[in-house]
Image (tube, rainbow, N blue to C red; front, side, top):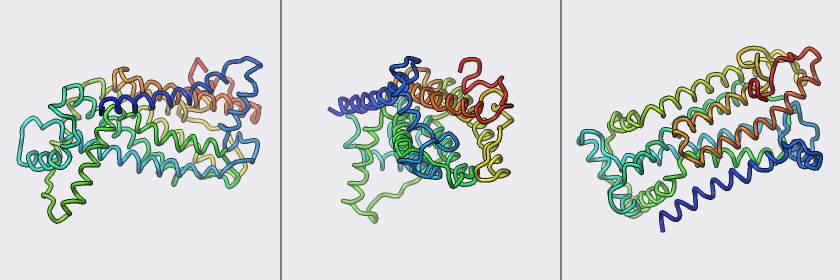
Amino acid sequence: MEMEMETVLVLFMRLAWIAATLPILIASIPIPKLHSLRTILLGFARRGKIMHSQKFTLPQKFFLHFYILASIWTTFLLVTTWCYAYTMVPPVKESSAYSTITSYLIGIGGSFLRTGSPTVSEIHAVWQAVFLLLLMEAQVLRRLFETIYVFKYSPSARMHIFGYLAGIFFYLAAPLSLCADCALDVFYFLVNVVSKFIVVGKDHMPPVEVELWQVVNPLFRLGWRHWIGAAVFFWGWIHQQRCHKILGSLRDSRQANEYAIPYGDWFEIVSSPHYLSEMVIYGSFVVATGGSNLTIWLLLVFVVANLSFAAVETHRWYHQKFEDYPNSRFAVIPYIL
């Protein structure tokens, strides 16, 4: 029964990404009959400088809500998954710290764990989820910082309410997709821990000791693919940070409703390098998993389709706004789009 529910969750996440991606892909087909669908989706996707209508819109500064939510949710998933992962696999050498915390966690959460010893693939999947959530944590915390301290949103900058709801969905679903294969096991484990805490009480809970190396050691044993994925992640992460800093500096030096052509870093090759780097970041999750996780593949396809759709519109706006806009720049993917 538990395995069936786990499968249902994974299937649900995959169907959700497919359902979110298909309208974008269909609207991108250059057929006149699809023009109305494209117009509707562009209305939802537009924000800031390319927003035409003020109907059903919210301040663009509400982007902050995305990253507050994402930071809380990702941190929760990371901490609970990490605790669960620690109960599944002992360190290389058992110590008093291991016997204390692991016995404690297994004792209070064991009734909801799968019966029998976990397989190597199950252990690997859980620690892989911890690794991916650590990367996601680095991403959402940086975006939260930038939204507060780097971006200076114009008071008139708006976004469609549907785009706002889509952002909420994305930052709930994306972290969950990174750990979907073990999310229900983690949930059952957490429920049992909380239940035991309520029944036994704080004063009767055994003391917890943690040795840092024993908590992180399995992450270093995952494999070379994960570290290549991490390298790709931070390549995109660093370039996105640079591009966001460039965009933020333009707002510092301009009046509220004035715009300028951004230069520097990946802006020299594409109009929306912050979108390109976002694609690289989510592509790194595919690299880290060796391309074996279909849910993460579908997450990446949504990110590429959604951001490409918006980037083409931004690229068109730049060319309409500035007569001297560099013709050598692509919209978002060099030499392709």
